[in-house]
Image (cartoon, rainbow, N blue to C red; front, side, top):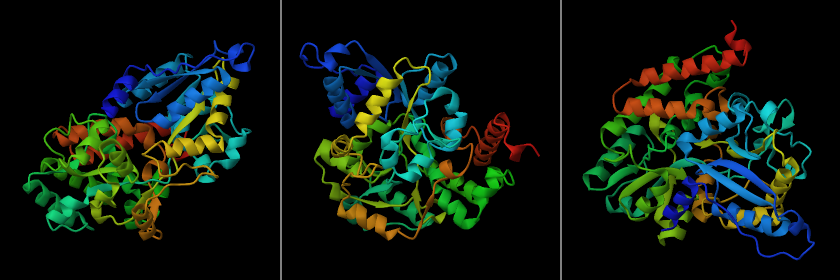
Length: 433
C-alpha cells in the first residue's frame, strides 16, 4: 500500500536516489561525491519533490539526502542539531515571524536568500512570513492557498438526510446522528501530536469577529488567552466532542497518514483536511473526489474561512559546507517547469504559491472558496505572536484535556505562560511593563 511504504521510508530516513551513469568529464560527473542533507518533518515532503531531487542529481551530480523525522519528534531533533552546531545543509520549518525568531534563531542559523531570483516570483504575502529584519530567509514551496476545513462524505450525509451545519449545535446533532448510524463522525488523528491542535488556532477569524482587535491586544500583552470567553467555548466544545465519542474509540492512537484510507472506505464521515485532500483519496483509493464536500469548522458558531500565508518552508543552514549547492537546489525546485511538475504530481496540492504556475482547483473547490470571498480571516497561529512556536505543547495540553487531566481553562493558562516566557526571552517590550 502506497501510504504504508512512504511512511516506513520516511520514518527510517532512507530516501535516496541513484543517478544514471553520466558522461566522463561532465559537470555532474565531477560533483558526484557531493551530498546535501535535508532535515524535514514527515508530512512536509511529498513524492513530487522527491522526483525532482532525482532529476536534480541526474543534472548536477549532487545527491539530496532527505532525513525525515516523525512530526512529534522533529522540532526537538532540529533544535538539538542547531544548538550543537550540527545542522543539516537544508532544514524545514514552519514560517511565521515569531517561529523564525523563537524556534530557529533564524538570523543566526540560516542564510540570507533575499537576492535569489525565485524570491521575486514567490507570493509576497508568503515571503513576508519568511522575512525577518528586512531579509528573506526561506522558501515556502507549499499550497498556502488551501485552508484546513471539514471534508465530509456527501453520500453519508445524503443517506442520513443531513445538511451542512452552520452552528455548533447543528454540528453536534449531525455528529450524533452519524454516530447512531454506526459510522464514526470524525477522523481526528491525535497520535501525531499536531493535527488536533488545528481546531483551536484556525478559528482565529471567529475570535476576531466576536472581539475585534483581539489579536492586536494579545500581541501588545493587553489581554491574555485565558481572558477570552470565545476561546474557552471552543475548547469546551472540543472536549465535549471527544467525550461524546465523535472522534471514535481509537482517536488517541489514530495517525494522520491513515486518514485517506479511512475516509475512502466510509468508516468515518468527516475529517479536518485541506480541500485538495479529496484528490489524494481519489488517486490512492479510486474514490471519486466528488464524493466529498467542504464546510468551515463551526465551533463557536464560526462561519468564516480560515486562511494562512505561512507554511512549511526550506532554510539553508548558515553553518553548512554546501551553501552554494543548497542554493542551487532551491533554485532548481523553483524553476517554473519544476514548480508545475511538483504541483501536478502532488495530489494534496491544488496550487503552489509562485507565479507562472497553473493551479488545478476543482469546480467544487472554486465554488467553496468563492462562497467565502468576503468572509475570511487570518488564523491565529500567524496573527498572534508566540502561539505557533508552542504548537506541539498545545497538542499535549489538549490530549491531557481530552482524558480529563486538565480543564479547558488550564489549556489557555498554559498558553499564556509559554507566551510570556518566549516574549520575555525575546525582550518583547509588551511584556516589560
